[in-house]
Image 1 (cartoon, rainbow, N blue to C red):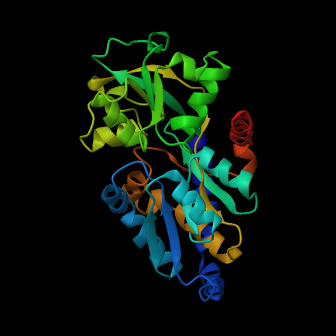
Image 2 (cartoon, one colour):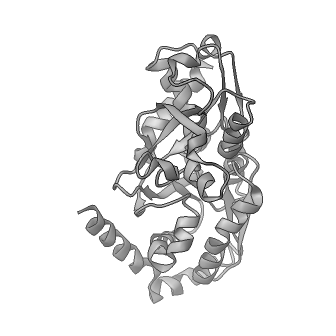
Length: 309
C-alpha cells in the first residue's frame, strides 16, 4: 500500500515538470541566474562533491540554469548560508531545520523527506563503542568519554543529549568523564576507532542488515566506502524514532522555481536511481512530501534545550 501511495505521489509530482511548467519557469531565470545547493559537513569534502555531482547535472538540465554545490565544513555553514540568502536549496537534519526556523520562521520551506525501505519517515540515533572496549551497555559508559558529531546535528547531538537527560535521567557532565564534538558523524566514528573517545553517537535507519551498517545512514555510508567494518563497533543505546530531515528551499524564491525543483527531485529515484542512492547515504524507498508541522516536535525539543542552556 505504501509503494502504491508513493507511486501516486511521484506521478503527481511529475505533472509539475510538464511543458507548461517549464514555459512558466522562464520568468524566474533573471532573478535566480544560479541555483546554489548547500551540502552538510560530516565527511570528506571530495566525497561529498563526487556524490552530489549527479544531482548538480540533473537539476541543471531540468532548471536551465547553472547549479553550484557548496560543501560546508559544519552544519552551521549551510544554515547560515540559507539564512543569509547565499544558498537556494539544501538537505538538512531535523535539528538544523529547527535551528533555522527558530531564528527566522520565514527563511526556508521544507519540501520533502526520505522514506526508509520499511515505509517509515524516521531514523535513529545510536551510541556505539569499539567492539574490544569492554563497554557493552549505557550503564557501563559512566566515567567514560563521549563524542557528539556536531552541535546542530539531530542524531549527533540534539536527540541523544535530550533523551539521555530526560528519559535516562543522566546528568551528562557528571555521568561522562568528557564530552566533545568530533567535527561530523564520520569524523566522530574515526575518533572512537582511534581511541580518542570511548563512544560516539551517529545516525542510522535501524532497518536492514546490521552487518552492512543497516540500509541507510552514516554507518552504511562508511561501510560502503570501506572505512568501517561493523565488527569493529557495537551499538549500546538507541533513541526513539527521529523524523527524517528535510530538503528545504528558500521561501523568498519564485513559486515556479520551487515547483520545478520539487517535481524534478520527486522523480529522481525513477530517472536516476544510482544518483538517488548516492545522495541519500544508502537504500531508501523514495521521497515523500512534508511540511513545517512534521518538524514541530524537534523544534520544541531544540527550543527547550536552548532554554536550558
